[in-house]
Image 1 (tube, one colour):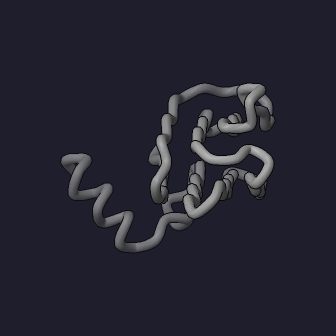
Image 2 (tube, rainbow, N blue to C red):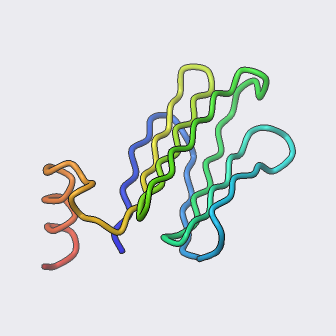
Length: 99
């Protein structure tokens, strides 16, 4: 599985795992956790939790999480289909995977 991460000004941690698609947070509003069959995404951002915007789009084989806090935005896509990746990112992954 290849995982795509696009982020600006955030601390991001991604780990593998499986389970039902779900979303949650760490209780203080700074972290969003999304888990699906492709893995688990944890996005933590500083800023005012009352101003956070989170959108989660789920489709078969793909989950995309959008999180905006202040001027920082994180977009994470978990997918089983390489066609979901932008061409430049596919090339970058190929060049860094030794294939």
